[in-house]
Amino acid sequence: MSGDDVFPDRDMSHRDKIEFMLEREGWALDAVAARTDIDPPLPRYAYTVGFEDRFDFPELCLFGLTPVACRGLFGLVADALAGGTDLPIGAPFIGLLDGGQPCALLPVDATASVGLFPALAEHHTRAREAPEAYRMVQLAWPDPAGALPWEPHFAGELAPVQLLLGEPPT
Image (cartoon, rainbow, N blue to C red; front, side, top):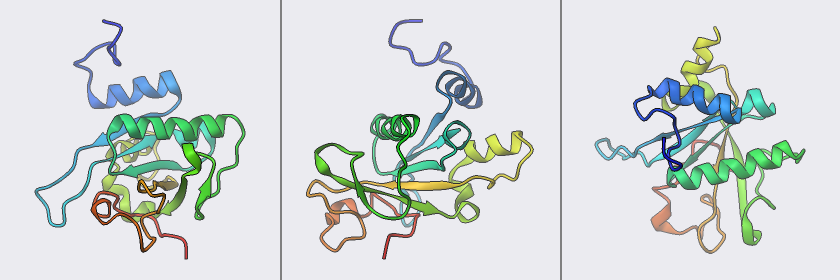
């Protein structure tokens, strides 16, 4: 294994990779490629497996960014939770992202969205739980000007990339 390899065996099954990350970090990331063959297209996204177990906090999902960027943002949340920070759910807040940029953790309906998160559903099924037996929030990120996706001045070109599963604040 070279120093750049993330997994000890490049031929590991997807499930084994999730298990490896869970053992190593206490949580795992699963990334899903964009689906341009459907209408409307589904942007790429990533989600966590194990946040509930490790931090007693909902799992996270994030749309429209690369897996590396998602990993970094999920890591920020993990570090904040591990440090005892109480992150608000539902309302925008400042303090997680650099430069005073806002973000929000929006509640996601697990029953309605379980099909988007197969590794998480499998994780719960293997634990003899219902596939949708998890809590999840969507990490909504700002455009370069600091607007969030539900705000009227949010960058139009980013709107289809950051699909909102969670209900925006009123």
